[in-house]
Image (cartoon, rainbow, N blue to C red; front, side, top):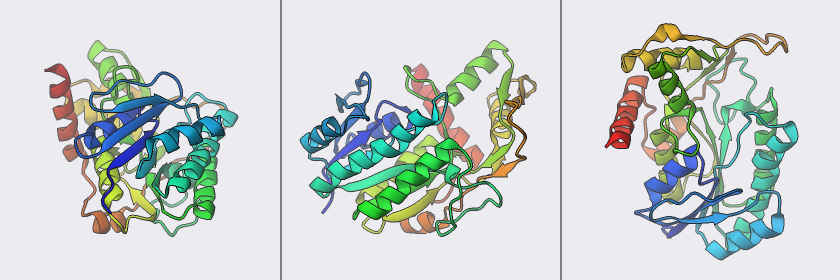
Length: 295
């Protein structure tokens, strides 16, 4: 049966906002935020703390959503306990409530579940996380696989694009600093299959209605690069100064060397009929975002 409604947990964030806008004309869309819900036209926004299982259960059941997307989670500027709570414990509480409804549960995981020793990771490769975010994501994955029946674990490479005004994305910050002539430090120690946010939200949208989109699938772009290399190509595309971009300084915890965290997304490409986008294609989409934002 085609879904009629979707609940996006973390719907005020970067991916969640784009996903809500993408789906609102096709489905009844609910979004949650653990602080102040963001108002999005055509979307019902709800407050839902991720550390209170009873409130999570009540909120999820109230929506009666056919699909629940868990898009909350981050590893930036948070303690290991916060990272675990948001990315793992909170996700499993939402899964428990979604299971009562028989809803499809889509969990947005990360390439960080791998250690970066070889790159080109496939869905069948054994995850070995090297940081707190990867460990929390893997803990959630294992819990979902053990407890869930109707689920999709979507491991995505990092995505770029414009964020909501209240929560600017790294793309927003880099473009803003370059326009002001400010130097920018970006990581050059991790290689990723960066993709535009539009690609990820389309992937999720198709997964909502594709019966075979279950288990684990990988999503990423078609050109591996570091964040520093992505920033330099972005600067060149928009006629800004690549010389302002510099390698991010080490945090002093030791240099683990360059990690290749690229994902092979060929299985998903065949299933969902979506080919990984090249950087030039992604920048074309970003340019359309900028023109829309200025109009």
